[in-house]
Length: 273
Ligand SMILES: Nc1ncnc2c1ncn2[C@@H]1O[C@H](COP(=O)(O)OP(=O)(O)O)[C@@H](O)[C@H]1O
Ligand SMILES: Cc1ncc(COP(=O)(O)OP(=O)(O)O)c(N)n1
Figure 1 (cartoon, helix red, strand yellow):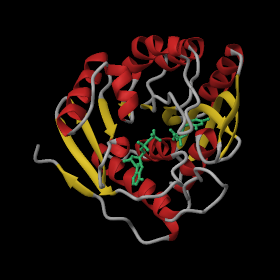
Figure 2 (cartoon, protein in one colour):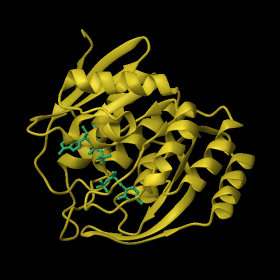
Figure 3 (cartoon, protein in one colour):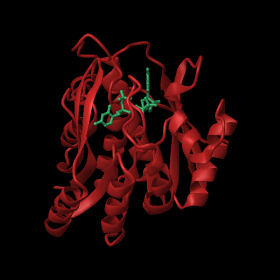
């Protein structure tokens, strides 16, 4: 059994955060472990409260898991503060575990999930340890200081992230205005490629970023090569959005069981760039 780890916040609504990650890890056949960084009181209508876990408790959870489990890949989600980022970075640095960083900053409803002063710690301490980073466009703009409007600027932002020490940058195009496709660009030192699916018009997209990065982490834990891992993660999230559960009155969760319960989704890959 391949073991995965998520270091993230709890979403009481179950669509994002730790809950989305563990469901995705399980669906993709890995054993999920977790370190909780914050508790959010959250439902499909938004984030009602955030309680950061004291940094010593984040540290003891992470030590407990790292000391006992053969973790094949880990991901980070909501890290909330500079102190939590510093602690997580210090402990992960001592282990050679493939790390997917989903640089969660703001929830769809607008609530802040990362303090402004934590961005420097993310860039200088955590990103140099990242095997893969998965920012959406607003997150990539904050991390690079660039304005992203098209493929060329998505690639330029990905390359800027490589200079910080990230090995692979996946710039997710789900937020690109006016787009009819959900087009994500993958940039590494020796490869650039695009994965694309039809953009689905729906309000049930709560936790898409968490679910996509967790699926990628599960595949990396199983030893799947990067292109195949990204393609499976894209199929997983597309199926989860395409077959909604219609829960709650706001932005509903995606369907984490859809990848296995419905026909495989077609992902278009472009690599002639
Ligand atoms: N409405 C949508 N239809 C299809 N794919 C989407 C949609 N929204 C997001 N995606 C895809 O879901 C994944 C997560 O992206 P995104 O929503 O940008 O993350 P985040 O939750 O971090 O903002 C990406 O592969 C993105 O292209
Ligand atoms: C606890 C927690 N972590 C992360 C998020 C953000 O999730 P994301 O996948 O970016 O989806 P949206 O919140 O933007 O729908 C969260 N909301 N809560």
